[in-house]
Image (tube, rainbow, N blue to C red; front, top):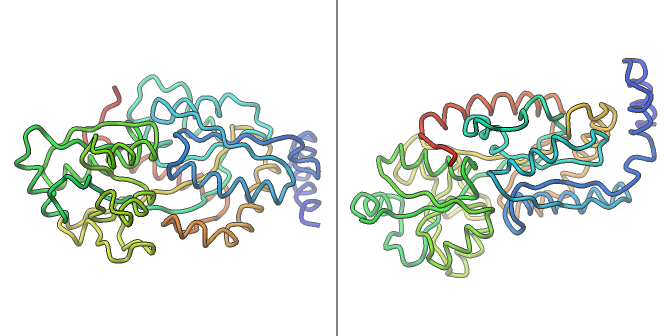
Length: 320
């Protein structure tokens, strides 16, 4: 059996007996908590709930999504990093996880050393959206408006240092314009503020598409290098007026460092097996399946840490 082979490999490699036991048939033997560093209703929360519902079915155990918004995801990050490393505490990580080391000098955990990668889940992009009251129907019109608007236009994000905050900051830099950043504690409150006209612009998750189709806001462009499968009529920012602009996001799962290797491998194997079954649900959210090994996700995290450090420096983004 696959599980038996995993256990045998763990013992041969010198894994502790407790690690092998933890990955056995009894794992998980109680509810698993999955931290999300943003408010319910946004993109990260949706990714987590689609996956945890399936994992609960497969493992026959409850997977509880624990939303802990605040401090750009650092509240959830610290809680996860300090949790018992036995596989019963996990966290959904996004680019924010590897951006924060470049923004916060007093970060009380190490984004790489204090976590064990489980796997990359899906790739994403963001949607440049504006409130209905904004007199712009294209990226070029928005740029022109921003150059003449006084006071400045405001743009919402899911928090300081979030990927969509930096997507906005990079857009402003490349377009040669200025706006005032307004951070929220998740995608849902940011989109709600945009719909209500409290802010004028936002780089949102795909939750904005439904709002745009309902006529509650306008989506002008997407941030990736290709159009979104759920809204192919919307151009990329690069083709709509800012050549060379590309920002893509992702969602992955990690565990506290020292989580038994056999547990991580069992989770990874299970996630890779169920992801294709979730394709339709993730596609409806404008996401593309990823998958891969824990080692590949670990290399991805280190690469992203370096990339976003350069973006933070270029954009001038700072945590308050």
